[in-house]
Length: 208
Image 1 (cartoon, rainbow, N blue to C red):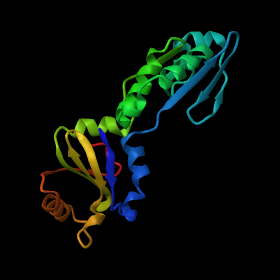
Image 2 (image 1 turned 120 degrees about the horizontal axis):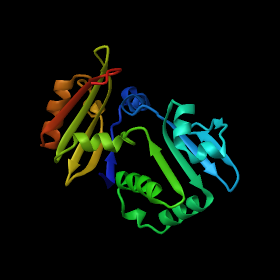
Image 3 (image 1 turned 90 degrees about the vertical axis):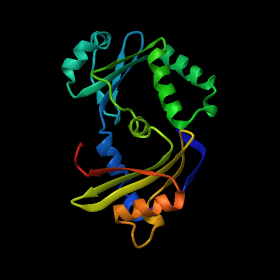
Image 4 (image 1 turned 30 degrees about the vertical axis):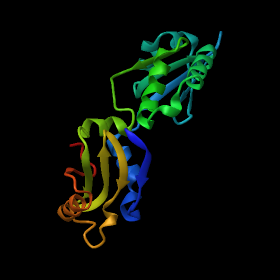
């Protein structure tokens, strides 16, 4: 999805600084339990590194873990042999030929399909920003994402897509004087790139 020669330019600092807040809103963090099993013991951690106390019986029966940790959205159970197989699979794969989104999906698919590693999910979810982008981007052209907070511009980005790949990432900062006016930014972008610009607007803190 991302072209290997992606051009990144004119990232307006005043709005780009909010990128992490936007990602946290669009892709809320979920609690994942990572459980490492040896022959007679099990260690468990959350994705933040917090250690949890579990028994071997619990590690063998995920339904017990769901009840014990209701906040968990996903459980990953690893054996030492499974981790070695997974690492070897990644090392032996032609990952340098993949786009970033393809590699992220490949990583997770291999994780789920590696003997010695088990993954349990409460429900399916978007794992990274590329999943959301794929739901939005369905043709070549320009894509303008515009987020406001209490009616004031909070964040935006302009994506230029050619042959199904994002070839340019920029912001309204390339248009001084009108950078915080949606209609004018769309007009200037269409004139500059000579392509239709598809807009998506959102209010920060809203799920719609």
